[in-house]
Image 1 (cartoon, rainbow, N blue to C red):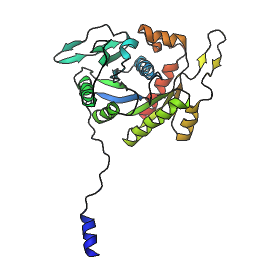
Image 2: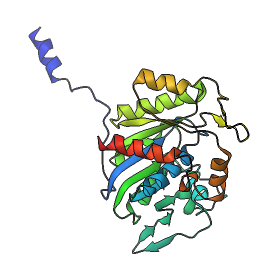
Image 3: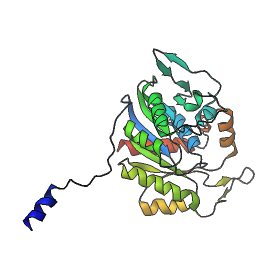
Image 4: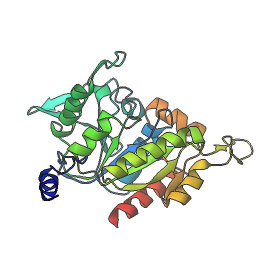
Length: 272
């Protein structure tokens, strides 16, 4: 038995899943990732409007569109047709509405598909983070692609992410994938700031009533059960859709203070 015990003691310890953390942007005080489990939930719209709302509160804000395959930020901010400038081998981010922005959509032809594998995506993200003159920032917001793949892991490895905002629509089909995304970030030790429910209800122009066209919210139930803060329920508003199409984020005016209230909650959560 003594020999067996000796052999057992000499066995190597089982491997554990660890993440090697770096911080390629030490000039940013807080880094916020905006994520979702699936596409089409309005994640980029949330990220863009949140960035503008935080800027309006007097903070220095940067926004990186990390959705390599489906970049939307150039359209939302109206920078899609503008040329990128370089100084001292560094990219100069666009600055509109108080927010510094950069997207892969600013660096490639808008009508061309990005057919890249994981290693190339990682290299591109690292370059957009470290080879850009972001300057001193209070908040750096990352618009992540949907899913739980290479980009999400690359971001976690490359930046000291302060927290994640998960975006979902009210129905189960969306929430199922969002729960997986939250689980992934929890496993790599990134705090969950909260959930934003987008397209929560339709606000009728003529009667001003809230119409919950997706039925009872599954997001509200999940947030309560998982003890995760429901940061906002964003309505379906015609002006919000139009503003994204014309390159003028809705939160520039934000007459209903929808994104201002969201920004205040996020800042409060990160200050704890």
